Amino acid sequence: MTLPQGDKELETLRGDVVAQVLVVDDRPENLVAMEAVLAPLGAPVVTARSGEEALRCLLGGDFAVVLMDVEMPGMDGLETAALIRARPRTAALPILFMTAESQDMARVVRAYARGGIDYLVKPVDPDILRAKVGFFVELYRRGELIRRQQLEIAERRRLEIESRRAAELEKQIVGIVGHDIRGPLSAILATAQVQLRRRGELQEEQVKAFERIERSTQRIQHIVGGLLDFTRARVGRGIPLEKTRCNVVELVRRIADEHTAVDPAREIRLRVDGECVLGECDPARISQVFANLIDNAVKYSPPGSPVEVLVRFSPDRSSVEVEVWNGGEPIPAEKLASLFEPFSRAEEGSTHSRTSLGLGLFIVREIVHGHDGSVAVTSSREDGTRFRVTLPLHPAHRAEGHEASAFN
Image (cartoon, rainbow, N blue to C red; front, side, top):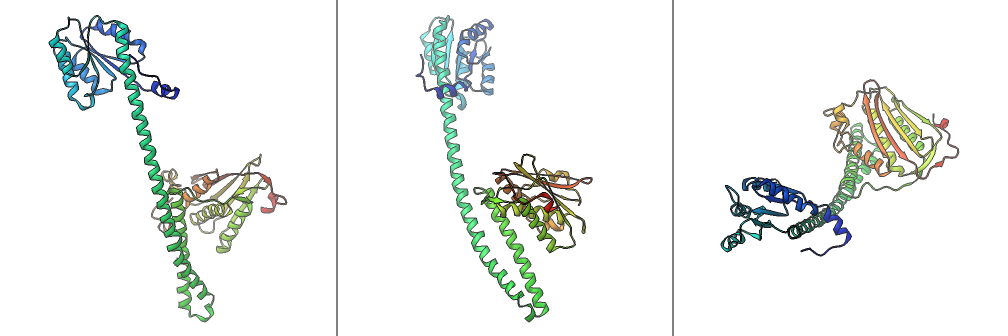
Protein backbone atom coordinates (compact mmCIF):
# COMPACT_ATOMS: atom_id res chain seq x y z
CA MET A 1 0.00 0.00 0.00
CA THR A 2 1.66 3.28 -1.13
CA LEU A 3 0.76 6.90 -1.59
CA PRO A 4 1.08 8.67 -4.95
CA GLN A 5 4.52 10.19 -5.53
CA GLY A 6 4.84 13.98 -5.63
CA ASP A 7 7.26 16.22 -7.48
CA LYS A 8 11.01 16.35 -6.78
CA GLU A 9 10.70 19.30 -4.37
CA LEU A 10 8.06 17.44 -2.36
CA GLU A 11 10.26 14.33 -2.26
CA THR A 12 13.22 16.36 -0.97
CA LEU A 13 11.22 18.12 1.72
CA ARG A 14 9.45 14.94 2.74
CA GLY A 15 12.80 13.26 3.35
CA ASP A 16 13.62 15.91 5.96
CA VAL A 17 10.66 14.87 8.15
CA VAL A 18 11.50 12.31 10.87
CA ALA A 19 8.67 9.75 11.15
CA GLN A 20 9.25 7.51 14.18
CA VAL A 21 7.68 4.08 14.66
CA LEU A 22 6.86 2.82 18.18
CA VAL A 23 6.95 -0.96 18.70
CA VAL A 24 5.50 -2.29 21.97
CA ASP A 25 6.14 -5.93 22.95
CA ASP A 26 7.14 -7.60 26.23
CA ARG A 27 9.46 -10.08 24.48
CA PRO A 28 12.95 -8.68 23.63
CA GLU A 29 13.46 -11.13 20.74
CA ASN A 30 10.26 -9.87 19.09
CA LEU A 31 11.47 -6.26 19.38
CA VAL A 32 14.79 -7.17 17.74
CA ALA A 33 12.98 -8.97 14.93
CA MET A 34 10.63 -6.02 14.33
CA GLU A 35 13.55 -3.59 14.13
CA ALA A 36 15.17 -5.77 11.48
CA VAL A 37 11.97 -6.05 9.45
CA LEU A 38 11.30 -2.29 9.53
CA ALA A 39 14.91 -1.14 8.94
CA PRO A 40 14.49 -0.81 5.12
CA LEU A 41 11.85 1.89 5.65
CA GLY A 42 14.50 4.30 6.97
CA ALA A 43 12.25 5.37 9.84
CA PRO A 44 13.64 5.41 13.40
CA VAL A 45 12.19 2.55 15.47
CA VAL A 46 11.61 3.14 19.19
CA THR A 47 10.90 0.08 21.33
CA ALA A 48 8.99 -0.35 24.58
CA ARG A 49 8.56 -3.55 26.68
CA SER A 50 5.36 -2.57 28.47
CA GLY A 51 2.31 -0.36 28.18
CA GLU A 52 3.65 2.00 30.83
CA GLU A 53 6.97 2.40 28.95
CA ALA A 54 5.07 3.02 25.70
CA LEU A 55 3.11 5.86 27.31
CA ARG A 56 6.36 7.42 28.53
CA CYS A 57 7.75 7.26 24.98
CA LEU A 58 4.66 9.00 23.63
CA LEU A 59 5.11 11.78 26.17
CA GLY A 60 8.61 12.46 24.82
CA GLY A 61 8.01 12.56 21.07
CA ASP A 62 5.74 12.22 18.06
CA PHE A 63 5.22 8.97 16.14
CA ALA A 64 3.83 7.99 12.76
CA VAL A 65 2.37 4.65 13.90
CA VAL A 66 2.36 2.26 16.87
CA LEU A 67 2.77 -1.54 16.59
CA MET A 68 1.12 -2.86 19.76
CA ASP A 69 1.30 -6.41 21.12
CA VAL A 70 -2.08 -7.34 22.58
CA GLU A 71 -0.96 -9.86 25.22
CA MET A 72 1.40 -8.22 27.73
CA PRO A 73 1.71 -8.71 31.51
CA GLY A 74 0.26 -5.92 33.60
CA MET A 75 -1.28 -3.33 31.29
CA ASP A 76 -2.10 -5.13 28.06
CA GLY A 77 -2.21 -3.65 24.58
CA LEU A 78 -5.93 -2.87 24.61
CA GLU A 79 -5.69 -0.95 27.90
CA THR A 80 -2.64 0.91 26.62
CA ALA A 81 -4.48 1.85 23.42
CA ALA A 82 -7.41 3.20 25.44
CA LEU A 83 -5.07 5.54 27.34
CA ILE A 84 -3.40 6.62 24.10
CA ARG A 85 -6.79 7.49 22.62
CA ALA A 86 -7.75 9.44 25.75
CA ARG A 87 -4.88 11.88 25.30
CA PRO A 88 -5.73 14.68 22.78
CA ARG A 89 -2.21 14.78 21.36
CA THR A 90 -2.25 11.05 20.46
CA ALA A 91 -5.98 10.53 19.95
CA ALA A 92 -5.56 10.09 16.17
CA LEU A 93 -2.33 8.09 16.30
CA PRO A 94 -2.62 4.93 14.12
CA ILE A 95 -2.30 1.68 16.15
CA LEU A 96 -1.67 -1.72 14.57
CA PHE A 97 -2.43 -4.55 17.00
CA MET A 98 -0.46 -7.81 16.86
CA THR A 99 -1.15 -11.07 18.68
CA ALA A 100 0.27 -14.60 18.63
CA GLU A 101 -3.13 -16.13 19.41
CA SER A 102 -5.74 -17.15 16.85
CA GLN A 103 -8.27 -14.53 15.99
CA ASP A 104 -11.03 -14.21 18.59
CA MET A 105 -13.82 -12.09 17.10
CA ALA A 106 -14.68 -10.59 20.47
CA ARG A 107 -11.06 -9.53 20.98
CA VAL A 108 -10.88 -8.18 17.43
CA VAL A 109 -14.01 -6.11 18.01
CA ARG A 110 -12.56 -4.72 21.25
CA ALA A 111 -9.32 -3.88 19.46
CA TYR A 112 -11.09 -1.88 16.78
CA ALA A 113 -13.27 -0.25 19.44
CA ARG A 114 -10.09 0.95 21.18
CA GLY A 115 -9.06 2.74 17.96
CA GLY A 116 -7.01 0.05 16.28
CA ILE A 117 -6.38 0.53 12.56
CA ASP A 118 -5.61 -3.15 11.91
CA TYR A 119 -5.33 -6.47 13.76
CA LEU A 120 -2.46 -8.75 12.72
CA VAL A 121 -1.81 -12.33 13.79
CA LYS A 122 1.79 -13.43 14.32
CA PRO A 123 3.83 -14.48 12.51
CA VAL A 124 3.23 -11.53 10.18
CA ASP A 125 4.63 -11.61 6.66
CA PRO A 126 7.55 -9.10 6.66
CA ASP A 127 6.63 -7.60 3.29
CA ILE A 128 3.02 -7.06 4.32
CA LEU A 129 4.09 -5.53 7.64
CA ARG A 130 6.56 -3.17 5.94
CA ALA A 131 3.90 -2.13 3.42
CA LYS A 132 1.37 -1.34 6.14
CA VAL A 133 3.85 0.53 8.35
CA GLY A 134 5.39 2.27 5.33
CA PHE A 135 1.98 3.62 4.36
CA PHE A 136 1.55 5.35 7.73
CA VAL A 137 5.15 6.58 7.74
CA GLU A 138 4.58 8.18 4.34
CA LEU A 139 1.20 9.58 5.43
CA TYR A 140 2.84 11.14 8.51
CA ARG A 141 5.61 12.70 6.43
CA ARG A 142 3.16 14.24 4.00
CA GLY A 143 0.97 15.53 6.81
CA GLU A 144 3.94 17.07 8.59
CA LEU A 145 5.08 18.68 5.36
CA ILE A 146 1.64 20.19 4.78
CA ARG A 147 1.64 21.49 8.37
CA ARG A 148 5.05 23.13 7.87
CA GLN A 149 3.92 24.70 4.60
CA GLN A 150 0.81 26.08 6.30
CA LEU A 151 2.97 27.58 9.06
CA GLU A 152 5.27 29.15 6.46
CA ILE A 153 2.29 30.61 4.59
CA ALA A 154 0.84 31.96 7.84
CA GLU A 155 4.23 33.49 8.75
CA ARG A 156 4.57 35.12 5.33
CA ARG A 157 1.08 36.58 5.67
CA ARG A 158 1.91 37.87 9.14
CA LEU A 159 5.09 39.53 7.85
CA GLU A 160 3.20 41.07 4.93
CA ILE A 161 0.59 42.50 7.29
CA GLU A 162 3.30 43.85 9.60
CA SER A 163 5.12 45.35 6.62
CA ARG A 164 1.96 47.13 5.45
CA ARG A 165 1.28 48.39 8.96
CA ALA A 166 4.88 49.58 9.32
CA ALA A 167 4.68 51.40 5.99
CA GLU A 168 1.46 53.09 7.04
CA LEU A 169 2.92 54.03 10.42
CA GLU A 170 6.00 55.43 8.70
CA LYS A 171 3.84 57.63 6.48
CA GLN A 172 1.91 58.91 9.49
CA ILE A 173 4.98 59.64 11.61
CA VAL A 174 6.93 61.15 8.74
CA GLY A 175 3.93 63.34 7.96
CA ILE A 176 3.56 64.49 11.56
CA VAL A 177 7.27 65.03 12.19
CA GLY A 178 8.18 66.27 8.75
CA HIS A 179 5.32 68.71 8.24
CA ASP A 180 3.15 69.29 11.30
CA ILE A 181 6.13 69.90 13.61
CA ARG A 182 8.85 71.14 11.27
CA GLY A 183 6.59 73.78 9.73
CA PRO A 184 5.84 75.70 12.95
CA LEU A 185 9.47 75.31 14.12
CA SER A 186 10.76 76.83 10.89
CA ALA A 187 8.38 79.76 11.34
CA ILE A 188 9.57 80.32 14.93
CA LEU A 189 13.23 80.12 13.93
CA ALA A 190 12.75 82.48 11.00
CA THR A 191 10.99 84.99 13.26
CA ALA A 192 13.80 84.89 15.82
CA GLN A 193 16.48 85.28 13.14
CA VAL A 194 14.66 88.22 11.53
CA GLN A 195 14.50 89.96 14.89
CA LEU A 196 18.18 89.27 15.58
CA ARG A 197 19.11 90.96 12.33
CA ARG A 198 17.53 94.08 13.86
CA ARG A 199 19.48 93.73 17.10
CA GLY A 200 20.57 97.34 16.91
CA GLU A 201 16.95 98.36 17.43
CA LEU A 202 16.35 95.94 20.32
CA GLN A 203 17.10 96.15 23.99
CA GLU A 204 19.71 93.78 25.44
CA GLU A 205 17.09 91.63 27.17
CA GLN A 206 15.16 91.28 23.91
CA VAL A 207 18.30 90.21 22.04
CA LYS A 208 19.04 87.56 24.68
CA ALA A 209 15.46 86.32 24.51
CA PHE A 210 15.56 85.92 20.72
CA GLU A 211 18.96 84.23 20.94
CA ARG A 212 17.50 81.70 23.41
CA ILE A 213 14.56 81.13 21.07
CA GLU A 214 16.95 80.61 18.14
CA ARG A 215 19.13 78.13 20.05
CA SER A 216 16.17 76.21 21.46
CA THR A 217 14.43 76.01 18.12
CA GLN A 218 17.58 74.80 16.39
CA ARG A 219 17.95 72.13 19.07
CA ILE A 220 14.35 71.00 18.63
CA GLN A 221 14.87 70.86 14.87
CA HIS A 222 17.91 68.65 15.44
CA ILE A 223 15.87 66.33 17.68
CA VAL A 224 13.02 66.24 15.16
CA GLY A 225 15.49 65.38 12.40
CA GLY A 226 16.90 62.55 14.50
CA LEU A 227 13.44 61.16 15.24
CA LEU A 228 12.57 61.34 11.56
CA ASP A 229 15.73 59.42 10.61
CA PHE A 230 15.09 56.91 13.38
CA THR A 231 11.56 56.30 12.10
CA ARG A 232 12.75 55.80 8.54
CA ALA A 233 15.51 53.44 9.65
CA ARG A 234 13.51 51.25 12.05
CA VAL A 235 9.97 51.38 10.69
CA GLY A 236 10.42 52.21 7.04
CA ARG A 237 12.78 51.26 4.27
CA GLY A 238 15.94 52.82 5.70
CA ILE A 239 17.34 56.33 5.65
CA PRO A 240 16.98 57.72 2.11
CA LEU A 241 20.25 58.37 0.29
CA GLU A 242 21.02 60.46 -2.78
CA LYS A 243 24.45 59.31 -3.90
CA THR A 244 26.64 61.36 -6.17
CA ARG A 245 30.32 61.67 -6.96
CA CYS A 246 31.98 63.45 -4.06
CA ASN A 247 35.27 64.11 -2.29
CA VAL A 248 35.33 62.68 1.23
CA VAL A 249 38.36 64.77 2.22
CA GLU A 250 36.54 67.99 1.30
CA LEU A 251 33.50 66.90 3.32
CA VAL A 252 35.61 66.16 6.39
CA ARG A 253 37.58 69.39 6.07
CA ARG A 254 34.41 71.48 5.78
CA ILE A 255 32.92 69.89 8.92
CA ALA A 256 36.19 70.46 10.80
CA ASP A 257 36.28 74.11 9.67
CA GLU A 258 32.69 74.63 10.82
CA HIS A 259 33.50 73.32 14.29
CA THR A 260 36.60 75.49 14.48
CA ALA A 261 34.56 78.55 13.51
CA VAL A 262 32.11 77.85 16.34
CA ASP A 263 34.83 77.07 18.91
CA PRO A 264 38.18 78.64 17.82
CA ALA A 265 39.82 77.51 21.07
CA ARG A 266 39.33 73.84 20.16
CA GLU A 267 41.97 72.52 17.74
CA ILE A 268 40.86 69.93 15.19
CA ARG A 269 43.84 68.33 13.48
CA LEU A 270 43.12 66.88 10.05
CA ARG A 271 45.57 64.52 8.38
CA VAL A 272 45.23 62.64 5.09
CA ASP A 273 47.26 59.52 4.31
CA GLY A 274 47.43 58.44 0.71
CA GLU A 275 46.29 60.01 -2.52
CA CYS A 276 42.83 61.53 -2.45
CA VAL A 277 40.20 59.49 -4.32
CA LEU A 278 36.66 60.41 -5.31
CA GLY A 279 33.77 58.04 -4.72
CA GLU A 280 29.99 57.82 -4.73
CA CYS A 281 28.12 58.78 -1.58
CA ASP A 282 25.39 61.04 -0.26
CA PRO A 283 27.35 64.19 0.66
CA ALA A 284 24.72 65.51 3.08
CA ARG A 285 24.39 62.22 4.93
CA ILE A 286 28.12 61.50 5.07
CA SER A 287 28.67 65.05 6.34
CA GLN A 288 26.07 64.24 9.02
CA VAL A 289 28.16 61.22 10.03
CA PHE A 290 31.40 63.20 10.35
CA ALA A 291 29.68 66.12 12.08
CA ASN A 292 28.24 63.77 14.69
CA LEU A 293 31.54 62.01 15.35
CA ILE A 294 33.57 65.22 15.54
CA ASP A 295 30.93 66.89 17.70
CA ASN A 296 30.98 63.94 20.12
CA ALA A 297 34.78 63.99 20.20
CA VAL A 298 34.71 67.68 21.12
CA LYS A 299 32.02 67.20 23.78
CA TYR A 300 33.67 64.24 25.51
CA SER A 301 37.27 65.48 25.56
CA PRO A 302 38.89 67.86 28.08
CA PRO A 303 38.60 71.59 27.27
CA GLY A 304 41.44 72.82 25.10
CA SER A 305 42.57 69.34 24.09
CA PRO A 306 42.82 68.58 20.35
CA VAL A 307 40.60 66.30 18.33
CA GLU A 308 42.38 64.35 15.60
CA VAL A 309 40.79 63.30 12.30
CA LEU A 310 42.66 60.93 10.02
CA VAL A 311 41.54 60.16 6.46
CA ARG A 312 43.24 57.06 5.05
CA PHE A 313 42.75 55.61 1.56
CA SER A 314 43.33 51.91 0.92
CA PRO A 315 46.35 51.02 -1.27
CA ASP A 316 44.09 49.80 -4.08
CA ARG A 317 41.97 52.99 -3.75
CA SER A 318 38.79 50.96 -3.32
CA SER A 319 37.86 52.33 0.12
CA VAL A 320 38.47 55.17 2.53
CA GLU A 321 38.75 55.07 6.32
CA VAL A 322 38.01 58.10 8.48
CA GLU A 323 39.15 57.93 12.09
CA VAL A 324 38.07 60.48 14.73
CA TRP A 325 40.12 60.45 17.96
CA ASN A 326 39.80 62.23 21.29
CA GLY A 327 41.66 61.82 24.56
CA GLY A 328 38.75 62.13 26.98
CA GLU A 329 37.57 59.67 29.58
CA PRO A 330 37.21 56.18 28.04
CA ILE A 331 33.76 54.83 27.26
CA PRO A 332 32.83 52.17 29.84
CA ALA A 333 33.41 48.68 28.47
CA GLU A 334 29.84 47.62 29.19
CA LYS A 335 28.57 50.49 26.99
CA LEU A 336 30.69 49.73 23.92
CA ALA A 337 28.63 46.76 22.70
CA SER A 338 25.38 48.75 22.59
CA LEU A 339 26.80 52.17 21.73
CA PHE A 340 25.30 52.22 18.23
CA GLU A 341 21.86 51.07 19.37
CA PRO A 342 19.05 53.66 19.53
CA PHE A 343 18.72 55.65 22.76
CA SER A 344 22.14 54.48 23.93
CA ARG A 345 24.55 56.93 25.54
CA ALA A 346 28.22 56.66 26.42
CA GLU A 347 27.82 58.19 29.88
CA GLU A 348 24.39 58.03 31.55
CA GLY A 349 23.65 60.98 33.77
CA SER A 350 26.21 63.33 32.24
CA THR A 351 25.30 66.79 31.00
CA HIS A 352 25.57 65.64 27.40
CA SER A 353 23.41 62.56 27.94
CA ARG A 354 20.65 64.64 29.49
CA THR A 355 20.50 66.85 26.40
CA SER A 356 20.65 64.00 23.87
CA LEU A 357 18.14 61.40 22.72
CA GLY A 358 20.92 58.91 22.11
CA LEU A 359 20.06 58.53 18.43
CA GLY A 360 23.16 60.13 16.90
CA LEU A 361 25.39 57.06 16.72
CA PHE A 362 22.50 54.83 15.67
CA ILE A 363 21.86 57.16 12.73
CA VAL A 364 25.61 57.20 11.99
CA ARG A 365 25.57 53.40 11.76
CA GLU A 366 22.47 53.33 9.54
CA ILE A 367 23.92 55.91 7.14
CA VAL A 368 27.25 54.09 6.94
CA HIS A 369 25.54 50.73 6.42
CA GLY A 370 23.41 52.35 3.72
CA HIS A 371 26.69 53.06 1.92
CA ASP A 372 27.79 49.39 2.37
CA GLY A 373 30.38 50.58 4.88
CA SER A 374 31.19 49.83 8.51
CA VAL A 375 31.73 51.78 11.71
CA ALA A 376 33.56 50.65 14.85
CA VAL A 377 34.83 52.13 18.09
CA THR A 378 37.65 51.40 20.52
CA SER A 379 38.17 53.20 23.80
CA SER A 380 40.78 52.98 26.54
CA ARG A 381 42.53 55.28 28.93
CA GLU A 382 45.89 54.65 27.23
CA ASP A 383 44.78 55.06 23.60
CA GLY A 384 41.78 57.37 23.92
CA THR A 385 38.57 56.89 21.96
CA ARG A 386 38.68 56.13 18.24
CA PHE A 387 35.70 55.93 15.91
CA ARG A 388 36.55 54.37 12.52
CA VAL A 389 34.26 54.69 9.52
CA THR A 390 35.15 52.63 6.44
CA LEU A 391 33.40 53.43 3.16
CA PRO A 392 33.77 51.74 -0.23
CA LEU A 393 34.42 54.06 -3.16
CA HIS A 394 32.07 53.29 -6.10
CA PRO A 395 33.48 53.87 -8.60
CA ALA A 396 37.01 54.80 -7.58
CA HIS A 397 38.48 57.76 -9.46
CA ARG A 398 41.61 59.73 -8.81
CA ALA A 399 40.82 63.26 -7.64
CA GLU A 400 42.71 65.45 -10.06
CA GLY A 401 44.71 68.19 -8.42
CA HIS A 402 43.97 67.00 -4.87
CA GLU A 403 47.15 65.63 -3.33
CA ALA A 404 47.31 64.53 0.29
CA SER A 405 49.70 67.32 1.22
CA ALA A 406 47.07 69.88 0.28
CA PHE A 407 45.07 68.95 3.37
CA ASN A 408 47.80 68.44 5.92
